[in-house]
Image 1 (cartoon, rainbow, N blue to C red):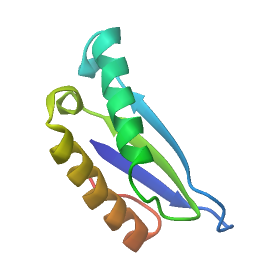
Image 2: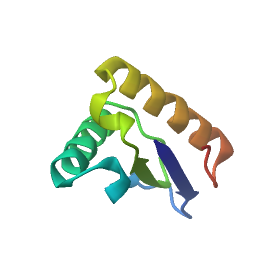
Image 3: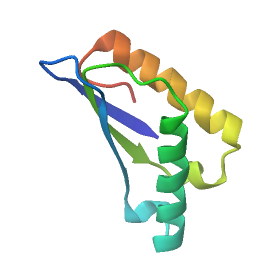
Length: 88
């Protein structure tokens, strides 16, 4: 997965969206990847004042839940530290 982040001018609650392109698979696989990533984001403490775009990859459908959450946590920590552009 890829996380793009942009710091906003205010310290309001984080805004996020999850997208999945057709390379992830058919509609069922894309929706499953997005649902899994949205739930992982709900369970993660998100940095204040960031706009996040999470781009799903095909592995998001089949990855073990713990690995998915750990990878998302790792990417969000990098985003919070960097503040603007994102890790890949």
